[in-house]
Length: 323
Image 1 (cartoon, rainbow, N blue to C red):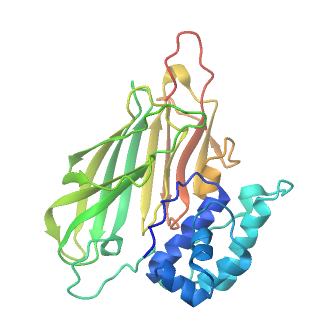
Image 2 (cartoon, rainbow, N blue to C red):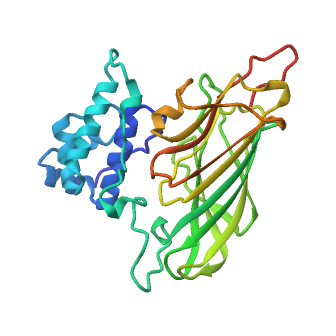
């Protein structure tokens, strides 16, 4: 058995996003690299390279992997071609022309990697055992360090649900080369946090242990406080990218009155690559009298981004570092 592959750091680049979703498809199919090699009739190294995210795999290898995992070869062929076009420096659309999976079909992937429902008596607690009914986030950028409070409502889809994963991605701000990169995460109410995996430096995962087990159909409310460590710059966006069913998201961002952003954009169902663009070309918004911008989303698609991005104000004399 070979060594496990390194986790992919999602930076919005088309090649890494392609590999990320190809791995997601392989995870759904529950196939090892050795099994994929046998099914595709390619060597293990070739298959591993296609999933590594270092370079765009050839069309033949990529679609062989898709077919072996039971994916929609026609849609993946179009996705592969979109990424290939985006890598062309003369492409007029760039990453804007990419529509990544998961798509609306087949039906068993419409609400995420796993089906919503599970067999009677199932006690598993991975994402198939619950879905998110709502997320309400209030992000403060007018404080000493950026701080967000999130209120989440989840609904159990199996009995004896005891804990759920809590994962937050904190990408580095462009140009940030400081050695440390962290996130302070705590529970305001609704459970307690246990350590989780640190797959890569910008990914923070914990396990929320519920106060009591949930039966199928029961709702649970919990709140988290997320703080960027002092002096750590924050990337100029806050986005919810549901990886399982998520029905409603409301975001309110409070900006520093002394450092109002030059521009604020709404991101509604955009590919991850658009999130990282300095000017995403989406609808622009203006802060209100409280220096805040609020947006709300429903009918969200799994794997797409919803939230806000902004362009920071030019720092004036004596200004503190930007959030």
